[in-house]
Amino acid sequence: MLALVLAAANSFAGDGHKSGAFQGAKANTGFVTHTTEGGKSMLTLSDDFVTPQTPDPHWQVVDSKGNTYLLQKLMIKGDKMNKSIEVPKYVHDIAKVQIWCAFAEVNLGEAAILAGLVKAPVFAVLIGTVGAYRGMQVRESARELGRLTTVAVVQSIFMVILADALFAVLFVKIDF
Image 1 (cartoon, one colour):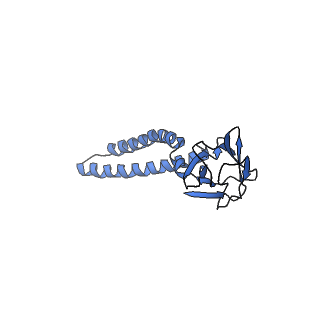
Image 2: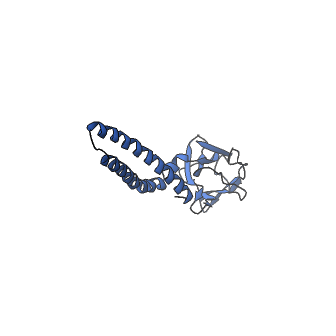
Image 3: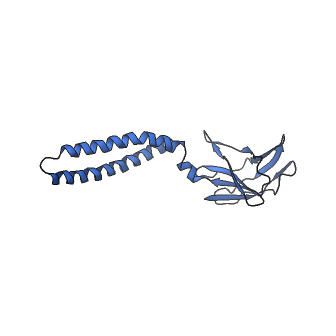
């Protein structure tokens, strides 16, 4: 887990206050401002904040008791930044604001589900084709059947790994 920490205000008191600068390996520019607008507690990033080049960065706050609250994604569709968020009512105070790399969420997202639905039929066709091809080559004995079955299994595993690698490259190219 990559947590990039910024010291912020200790409570929600007051109309607005500015934190110190972000300090961390990936988030080290800009600051956050905490304001109250229409009874809603808001956090806003400064214009000089640079989005960390990490997978799936999120807003995260830590209260004075050490409770951590993972909030909205920092990046939204179309490479736009979610520069301002409303803090949920259940967060009573803020000791720190963090930009957290939610890498695990990248692996469990919608793209992974859709990618599996696309890849599974292709893998099935590859395995079936290799198995049928090697099965048709059996001519003389049960020993040959066993040998060609082993060859078919090994070739199917290789083909699935190769196809999966090609899908990975394709999905990165089309941003899937």
